[in-house]
Amino acid sequence: MLVFKKIQLKIKLIIIFIILFLILSSFFIYYTVKAKQTSDIYVPIIMYHSILRSKSGKYIVHPDTLEADLNYIKENGYTTITITDLINYVYSDSPLPEKPIIITFDDGHYNNLTYLLPLLEKYDMVAVISIVGNYTDSYSKTDETNPNYSYLRWCDINDMMKTNKIEFQNHTYNMHSMSNSRNGCMKKKNESIETYSSILKNDLSKLQNEFQTNTGYVPNTFTYPFGAISNASLNIVKELGFKASLSCGEGINIITKDPECLYQLKRYNRSGNISTNYFFKRFEKNIH
View 1 (cartoon, rainbow, N blue to C red):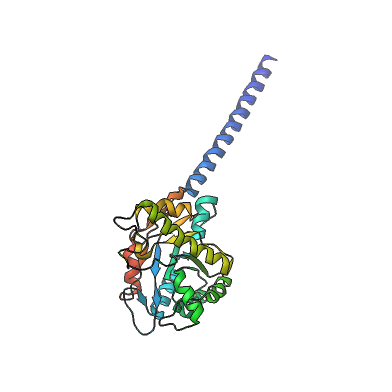
View 2: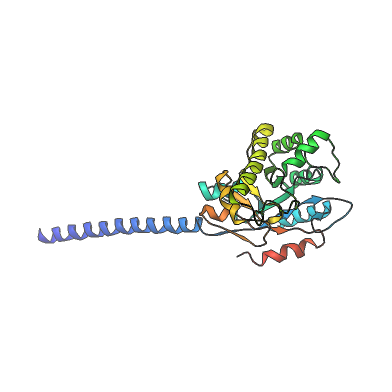
């Protein structure tokens, strides 16, 4: 009888050991997977501006160059995403593709509609366009649609949004200039914080309101003109509800679960004077 009880005790101990082992193994697997899911993600962002057939330059690419870039992105396993996808990853754990990349276009040139949109549809990709509100208002009034010099009208923006291929963002209403001693939306040297804050808030809010009125959509990202950034602008951008901002500084973005990583995102300017392979190799060596 005593021997039988000892055997029962050993069996119970073995069962308890197995259960504890399974529980600890489950925790280990869970946290290993969780750590992998929350590891740093490297995201390159490309900055384009105008697309023209007539010439190329530092801020101008030929449509054939753009198509070569998109083909490179496809053939090398990248998946284009929007800034909103990035925001949703940080705030809501929404998944990102294995090799994410973001294509951005600044200023809202009309040729983005002429040349970019058809290529996005051809390659099944998405892009981000940051408009200057004053440009859009002006061309909405004149109704000019010349790819060489016009800017997107509100009707164009609405049509492009319906394709789900373009995400629009805020590039100031009327601070995309270097006039009146101000570089873009930077604070002037002797300007008070109060004055600067009022000017910047009014400008950015004006475009936010126009987006709401004309499209029913409100941008979640602010794109600094010329990449000119004042420290005084950082909190203002956040106070206005922007979840991210784009700079012109070059480098690969390391995305974590910290919302701060979404501000002053780096971008590589796409000059039309270099080849597709040369351009991509410049930053791919920095992706781990």
